[in-house]
Image (cartoon, rainbow, N blue to C red; front, top):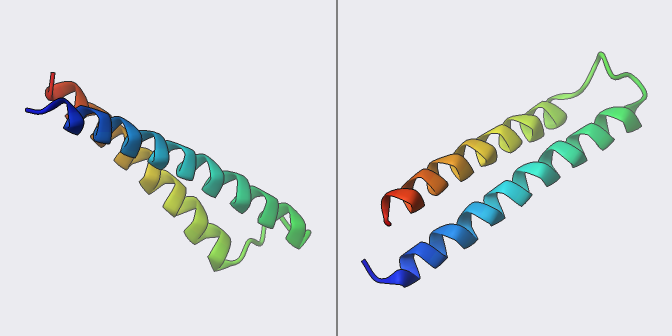
Length: 69
């Protein structure tokens, strides 16, 4: 495999990881801003699920990158 695929996998993994961190951060801020942390709306929950999906995808991409070596 050309080394460009390894670099692209690394870049993609970092983008997914940072996106997951931002999703958790924004969802937490939105939950706090509503004033009722026990009753969060569906948009905040979807944002948390998106963050988890981004973290899982980042792990998958890093595993694929490791297999390219």
